[in-house]
Image (tube, rainbow, N blue to C red; front, side):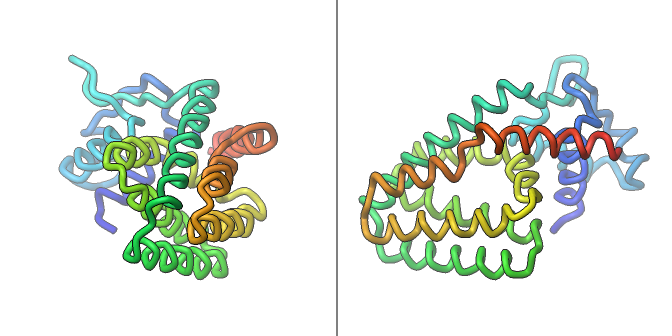
Length: 218
């Protein structure tokens, strides 16, 4: 992982936790002094965050935080769930040998990461797993939309994995999704992916409590 990527993760976590509020200006000089680095990796980190939508550039203000409010976050997860469901449905219909091999490999990597209990490693493998499904949809436009929103929600999806027992639950859901795709069950693949991604009820409450807990500990 590059220095810019490590800096991006720290700044990303500050945004998710509320330590950097929406609308806050992200001054490159101040951030460089804080982390003891030059402005170059800071600039690269902010550019990466801009791709996810957590940071935006405003005239005369530069980079600012654009973290979503809870109602918008919920709406984004609802949209993500529908995009993933569509990817799963198409993947079950259009699966080719190369995508099947990649899907099995991604699931095995998730299982290994889950067994280690390392949420950060599992998050990385989880990202690969979902990306494989997007690619397996064989729909370039859908892939692009799903991938971009996945990146936008990345810090929140990673935080979800820290909830108690979530790694095991996530892996079991992955296994159910793969089983449906491999037998070509479009409806089951779509429904299982929708349920896997959708954040509602207790899961949304847990996510909000996790965000608050990190903020309180800051």
